[in-house]
Length: 244
Image (cartoon, one colour):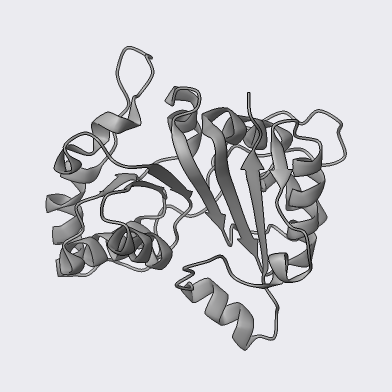
């Protein structure tokens, strides 16, 4: 998973810059290698060499350079959710960030098979991408089933931190949404604590069903299916960006 992580037990958490997570799992097969070599270069997001900002509206020429909205999914795993959203919303530009190569090739397969033209991929740590995005440029950010790093000594590796939520709040437009899902109760609580002290994010829940029911239009993910099969109940948290 990406490496913008918090240090628990501190009032002001500092981001760590080391990468935590796998780059590659099972050996890629021939068609997977081919997709990686032929499809990814055209979809990959390379950051400007001059350290300047990256205008995400320029990333979607197939949409005429004018997507209706721009969404970001951080750590898209196998890409099931991202591909389903891209297919359901063809005029919305969707950026997926995932350094795990095997997850990237699964998304590439979905893009090819479904003919998706509104997806771009950052196959590196998302931290640098977030830092280059201008203020108020995204309509929605997803963080779904991130690695929970459940042991106490590992929690500094979790993506959600004071710093990461501040950065998400910065890039979201006023009224933009940050959606988080996890099957680990401790991580859901961890996220709520940090979101509560983030001055620009407001939890939208008004009743229990708001955090126990999936988000509208939810296609599910393979991680969610594993959690449900193991008897773990997922939590779905939605936060809105307060007006500037």
